Length: 169
Figure 1 (tube, helix red, strand yellow):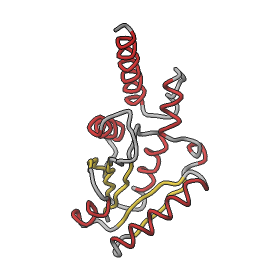
Figure 2: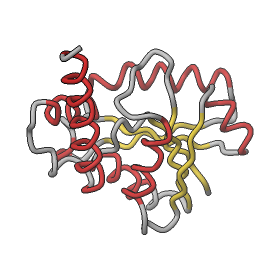
Figure 3: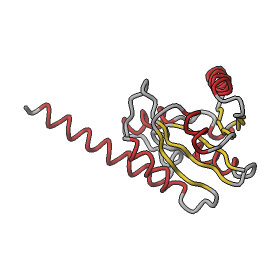
Figure 4: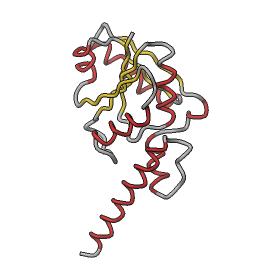
């Protein structure tokens, strides 16, 4: 059976990687779907996020990585996939995730959503937290794959250089 694990992955964290590995104990294949939410602003472009996810998950059998702009249920219908994997860290995720699962079910009645609860060591971890800590120069190497550490350093260095250039005009 094939399932989709969607998210913005801006950037992918070790918590996300853990959810993928655990999902593979339940299904044969996981499509990690890098998505774009028009309500969010991103540090990394869709292509950059997809490349980071591919590199972070390289070597894990049963994983494919795709990107998609649009309504998730449209992608699922197009691909003929009826199982969605979602990770939940804490009670704060619950209300949003249930709301989305019910809306998706209304739009695609054949869809089932499976929630995997984060391991305790990742229960505090979010992409937003990673970006904030990295922005202030904190060490995020225990929270994200090595390729993401490097991508964050490079992206933040470039943004800092651009800001310095604008200040000199």
